[in-house]
Length: 430
Image 1 (cartoon, helix red, strand yellow):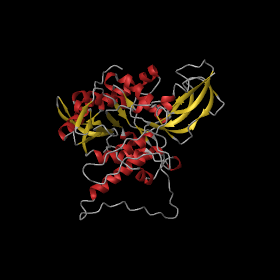
Image 2: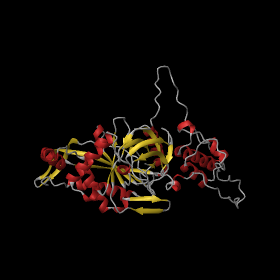
Image 3: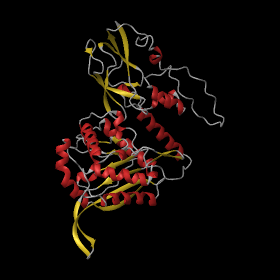
Image 4: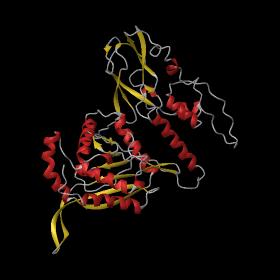
């Protein structure tokens, strides 16, 4: 018999910790290799963690609601295999070594300002995750300051969101101090509560969405350009081939893959839309990874990503779109499904909206909202002169980050998307 440690797995390059939502097994249960043992939540998605070994779950090391760093042991499994050096807890000691590291002496600041020394945690009155400790050290937050930050985690623990919000507030206060004679930043007035009003606590995903939307508006100066596109050819083509597509692939053909194809083609024409901002640097992305906003049954929103969208035909895009949308609504997306997006599309037309002003998904620099398709009278040119005809039209709303995308680029890009949609070949094979 051998005891092996199940550790919190790495679930994405930017994910450093996860919160344990629920254990699916209890001590004494037999588990198979790759069988789901627990559910965890990251700042991107909820997911299940499979067992790395088959055996008996002997001990659970992390409670539900606890925030655990990647690589930290969360359970011990008794296996029937011979003890191996790579599987024993002794050999895993470096990964499970105490998180607290010896603090280095921090020299006093040369500028003479009263900057607090970074926190040490030997005398801490509550638990701090490795990520929170790292942020505290990098931002020179003393333990005394850290202990004053209200925690929203289990048993009042400070989460990444808590410490970042506290830092932002501290920085705002520092900025406002020199302008003592200027206007004081107004705090939002507390809402009034009357008898019969219902108070609904935001769930974890809604809090995360709210935080990211506010942060995006703070980071990026948003500008939105609008273009109306004639998509009559697309409507006729889809009506002609959708039954054949259903028979061939066993699923529906929506307009979304057609729109995504046009966006991918336009990105190739205007690659400076496919960029990200890193301080004073612009990172031009090689891959075209298009995120698509999906509304969940809970009312929340999630954005799975189609990797290398420019490398698929419409049939391939349709199957990927359907798969991601179905798994999103069934809460079966994996962290990798949400990572790596370079541009985002949101189909507000599915809610009957004709246009919108979408908020950019950071660190991207642009997002496209697609409005509802409507029949409209329009003037068309014919060999015999102009005529009025009923056409299928829709608005494209393109929001972009004015730090790096000017009106010429942002407007030209959305116009090019409309051109690809309007020039769609109605005789195109499936």
